[in-house]
Image (tube, rainbow, N blue to C red):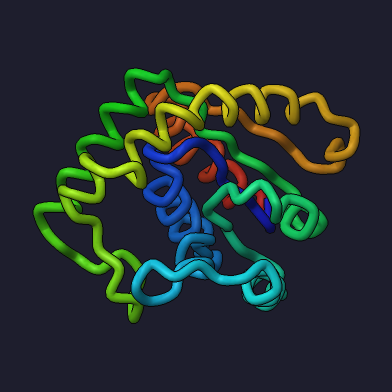
Length: 184
């Protein structure tokens, strides 16, 4: 595992897990959301976004956090491992709600230099609500990654599905320690 893409629906814990994995392995941590979002919630064009991703994944070792379906060909051309955090709907909704409330209360900037923050109003009371997006996207994302596990087009990439936080913790403690010990 040298070039890892951590995927899953919003609220699954991708960022937390990917940061921990990158730290444990001593790899660069790359967050797709940080590459995509500009100040004032302005979206990058695909040209800008793809250029940022290409530059970020030039290194030999990285943990890339994020989905962005349209970026699959680019990132998976270089990735050797995909780790899918596939938690239950209830678990993921709970984690997302807890995270969203925490961010709305703290008002902390999500990606340095953007000024982008989550607010209670936007997160819970608008058509742009992250919770509404989760409700709509969860089944489609689950179906997409379930099919990708067996897709011959990415058979060159190790595909690891972690279905519970317990499996995720075990992966970080057992598998990563073993990999480091063997120098893999």
